[in-house]
Image (tube, rainbow, N blue to C red):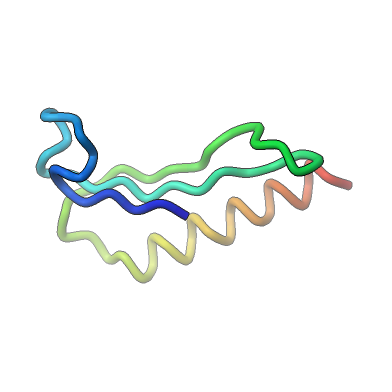
Length: 64
């Protein structure tokens, strides 16, 4: 799980945004990333939980 807030993104266009992202895996290799881009003042607890769960579901589905 990675969370970048405002200037932490390193991209001037996103200085007023946040990014919450998590990679998903197939056979222990990263095959993609699920992410939410939103305002700096987003509900982090809900977004982090949702991104985490979605990443876990994707990884599980890919490894069946």
